[in-house]
Image (cartoon, rainbow, N blue to C red; front, side):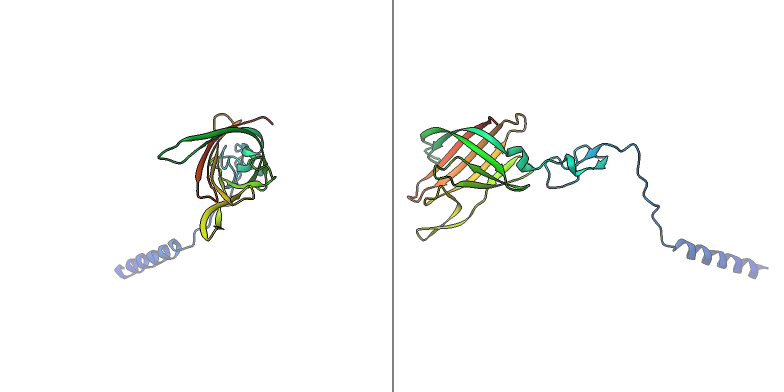
Length: 191
């Protein structure tokens, strides 16, 4: 009798072990009818996951370049770099910013010869001038050629998060004569 009970316990243990090792199967996904809020599910968009949870809908996405494009009046102040920081002059320009892709923009209006600057915009409301190594008189300077002459420019444009018609500029221009100037200014959207 003890042998039969032992055999039943061993067989039951083996059966329990076999069934406990069975592979788990996920239940089929169920769409919750309460989740109707559309949200952007593109990580390159400014509004990525705003409104989550809900239904992914790419038509509600807006991209970094969408917040920058337009026509702006730019007020520029030019300074020598620190430590002197001497004010040199100021000027006002009309800038035309157009969208080239979801992450790239061009700014027209700085150069009288019609050249434009290209920038890469991020979802963090900052656009950075695309820079590359530029060879000027056998010295390598990091920057984008500026207005077709031997000058290069680097820097950023920051969009105001509270007032969508304002932007702030911070550029450094290295001239072919070796003088570096800082351009600091703001722009207000007019169109």
